[in-house]
Image (tube, rainbow, N blue to C red; front, top):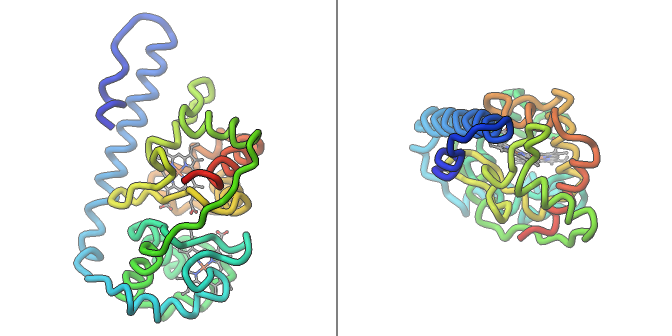
Length: 227
Ligand code: HEC
Ligand code: HEC
């Protein structure tokens, strides 16, 4: 983040100034997200998560997400190795109907905050899935992932999701590496369509709005093989 803040030296010319504006916007958004992400969770963070209790409580999730969070089918996202804060937020959002997952209807209603913390801690500790990317699509996807698109105002994914797609736990940025391409595309499409809108400050909705179908396919393919 320091890099984002410092790199745009003030020079004349439309390119450097539009990059300056973009970088400032990204930085402001990141700061706002960090502030947002860290403070309201203070309460939830007082819960001490119990991983082995989480394993038992996750038994009902195994049919779709796999016993250790590696799912048997691309309709169901891998949860293994996902960041605990992100998992907690999504499970809570599903429970509170801020994110619609019809397939999980009734499954989260009875989960307490403690249950959610335990389940999240369990999945976070499992080894992530490792996929194999289709090389041509992945090459194009890598460019967008690492550099974004200055022309189209797409921020580099790596700034938030990390150089290895590992995410940033404290900020609530999810890991993306190894995920099923079909699920990554579904998520990005849902952010673009507005059918998924639980992202803080519309951060993913505004990025996905600028992405084409082929951007989504290529970046999803790249992420599948990233480790
Ligand atoms: C009947 C199948 C099914 C079961 C059982 C199920 N899920 Fe899911 N889950 C899904 C589907 C489908 C999605 C993806 C929805 C989408 O595309 O947005 C999902 C998404 C999720 C996500 C979001 C993942 C992400 O990367 O954003 C989490 C977290 C999750 N489930 C946790 C659980 C937990 C915890 C349980 C058990 C209490 C559970 N699920 C049980 C089908 C299921
Ligand atoms: C400024 C930070 C930021 C940038 C840049 C960013 N993301 Fe995200 N992304 C997030 C946050 C925060 C979430 C989680 C939203 C939530 O909590 O519901 C997210 C969620 C996602 C998800 C959903 C993951 C899941 O398991 O369902 C995908 C896919 C994703 N981002 C892809 C991308 C791609 C591709 C790019 C680059 C084109 C990108 N992101 C750039 C912050 C960012």
